[in-house]
Length: 590
View 1 (tube, rainbow, N blue to C red):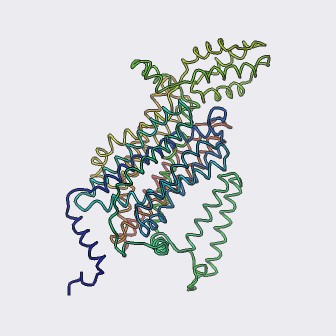
View 2 (tube, helix red, strand yellow):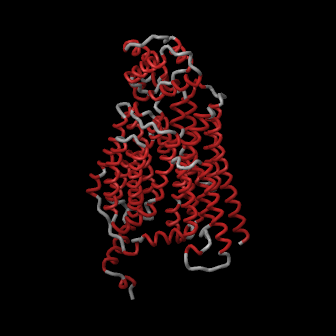
View 3 (cartoon, rainbow, N blue to C red):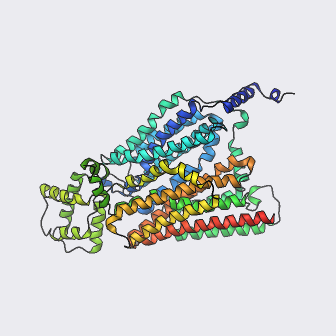
């Protein structure tokens, strides 16, 4: 009997469509529409994400929301955590209810949320609206990747995903450029533009035609949870991790101190260990009476180690923009741009002269007749001025305040001083960070080709060593061991090193999953690969908020912060080496 006779008519039609698709050479209309929508979604996300650290720490009177460093870290840790974790569930919803519907839901959530994100200043409101953006993005991610997967076949899948990855980085490259230009107009314009990018996506969505899926491809939420147990661990293991992460989040939003949170996590782990001892050698059907079980120990260890890479890599977006704004003198780059004309300087290092003049009048009114300012007060003034994109030396600020006496600056005098202080203008941090995307677009394919002949684990470790080297370079700069007059050039070198580390580590980290996953479960394992990214974003945000607030702002020791991140990168590399050694020994013994 022909096996096709066992299928329902709808399943038979789908099988014939899939067979035809596997043999046709092109990608199909859905592929190109998905890539177009990916570009605009990335324009919206990175248009906000690239300037998020600067925006959240900019005072309210200057258009920002004036969050503290711990608050900023909590937002940047918790929100992306859910963004990368929720696709496990939203992907199953897309299979059940349709890709086009899920695309529409994601755009309906994101478009207004991006707009309202720029209209609030309270932490709780900002957090909840950004959470809606993340939920919308988590609906979008699995659907666009699923469309690319279903639009390609064995003969063109590599090219198809290569095109898709290029579109991701193209959006990531253009988004911050547009956002940097718009924030010179107003911060509101940044969020309006992100909302517009999402609204544009409704146009290609009208042309999107979804291929039918067989009943077998529709995954229920129950099946998703069962798959998670197969890949990672049982329900007790999930509860153990989830509760620990939730306790850590309470510290991130300052409901608990970090020592209190870590104490509670240690207590929670101890209680679970004791409970497992009581259940030893017992077989129970109820989930809470089963000991904690890790389904695939090697994979779980790999995800835990890989979390270290995403923790340090995301400092490129979380911490480095703030460090560039607050402490790096980029006048060497401004001088270089001057060779291309004043328009280039005004674009990359724009200063709002009127806002700077008003700020100088405010400072004059506040400090007129006061005693000589301490070094702490002078540094506070300097950090207020960097929000206006001028990094005025403390010595110049001291001269300015000492000459005030009971003297008040009028508008004309303030404007004249503002013009003189334009020589301290700085390049926007988002433009420098954008070099990461540019490097990936230009060099990723070449780097991947060169790395093909090397072992995966060796490339992973090399990428982490390069990343650690970038942070050590920042450490040397913070310690005054590098020429501060070339601050912009040093930062460019750092960003390119981080980009090179990403080009080595990120693709190979996925390749490593393919090498350790069972052949019949490779796709499922790749889905849970993003758990490491979710945890990496979470730890990156919390570490950034704590280290920048305490080590940099309070202790005035940015070198300790960069040493911390370099150490995490090196420890992660060591973890990969030990895991590889363990796997080799295990294979040899078996």
